[in-house]
Image 1 (tube, helix red, strand yellow):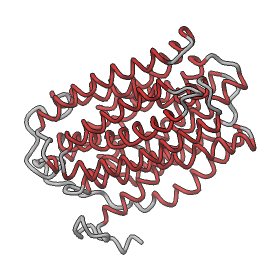
Image 2 (tube, rainbow, N blue to C red):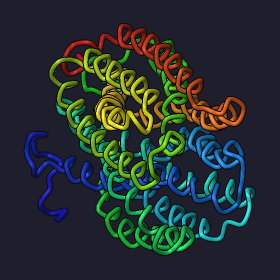
Image 3 (cartoon, rainbow, N blue to C red):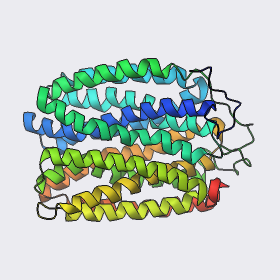
Length: 413
């Protein structure tokens, strides 16, 4: 298979080696997305078996966000220095081990360590930062499209694994379900990640990540553009993590069945896949910034629809997954493409990783805070209004970053 692909082929050719990298990273993203997405289903099982408060149980997810945040910059640096083949298979092994350990959880301490650290570290080693770094180096003209394909794996993984996990839990119990996931991840991904044997080519040092002019002074780690995208990620991290973890519990609270909630989350994952592909295509043609703001409007509409769902207004749940799924899918791709246009390629992994610290720490606080709000107020309504607020703040900081980097034109030029 590797002999078929050539790094010297044009980006538009199926023989271009970058498309093999896209295919493999699509699968690693699907795996990471599946494990993150299924936590909301296992979360319900934890509440039923152990009787923990929602805030305490949500801390397992919150600790995973801390691990994502604190390790992303280091892992980005490892990718920059040693390449994907040396890093990603290690992540597969760590993730498989963590999932197997999850089948032995007996208390909050083991939940926090196994999921919050071991599983989260494995996901970080195979996930967003390695994928984004690899794809951004292999592609220039088709970057947003290639990223849309690779990162859509995150949503597709949830589409397949959320309903499957619900089935496995019902049929065999949540402990056996985690063992099955551990075996599947290890056996599938270890041989596939060996295909990433080439180091992605870097453009000349003086060229930006998009192959155009050099990044202006200060557009590296710690520069103004870095802090704009750092804050944007922080604000969005709060909102996205609240919705991601608590949507299933909210839908069950308002009268939908657990199986229906799982099916809706699976549908949302499918639509995020479609949204990511559409966002990549639009970002390469109409401009990253215009595509980004359009996707944000759809996401906000989805949050308002979620707040209106009840047993009688169940149709709003389906509208919610349409708007939020398409919106969030496109939003993630266009925001990442804006970042890739802003920063130099040779250090993009490290910069991208450290820009995720704010998002990760905010995402750690968000689920716990929403669980606490629910425990005190008896409803998620106030937590969802917080999501609206931080999303608006995120829009403003992305606008500032995009204007500074002049990424509004098609192709990021």
